[in-house]
Image (cartoon, rainbow, N blue to C red; front, side, top):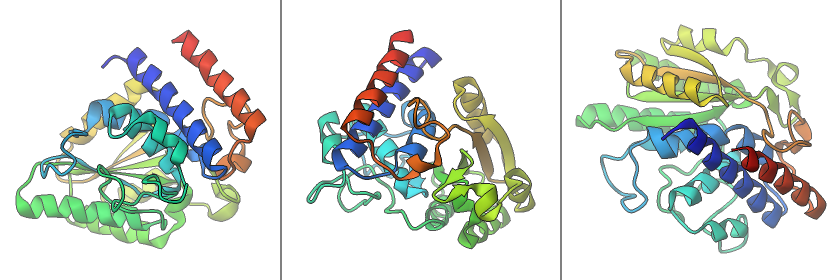
Length: 275
């Protein structure tokens, strides 16, 4: 798929994020928007997945470790055909399959229930190890937040992955530099992330998380790296694509009201017209 088509899909994914959080009157749009390009690339180019075969034992696995950004995951899954886009309007509603954090008990296509920060990467490491032990070829991917990397469990999992040489594992960090209470430096500085992952025997690649050429090259390099897991550190913009949300920490966990919804959708419509 060419970059122009990926950009168009990513823009639709961003619209879905705004629709879902507005409909719920709650949720986490900022970090969902910053990861929208990554979600798009994973589900439309990188991963071996099929919405019609969600229990295929040979499918690639994805664990959303920063589970609060599930509006982005739901939106890309709707674009990929896992469920109708209209269902995004049920996000966080009672009885909906689209809960505020991923729940594999409700929605086929989710490989792990997540949301308690630090735990998702541990589950992903277990999946990657299982593939090795069972002689299976599937790859495992997990997305972390940069604030999430302040959790000790992240580094326990990283230590294990490096020690076991899990080269079928790709850890992605969405480095938008903002978490719920401020910048990551202000809250509990986890930098330098690249050196930390290298210390745990990871191959590390740093990229612009909104550049599809760099994203594509990074995942190709990850697949070709043998004998060690890969960490991709993506520099991103929190709230990407919505003018008043970009780089604003307040939009970590705030839903747009009706007026803000209209502005956000017009922003994204304008971006779509340029594509």
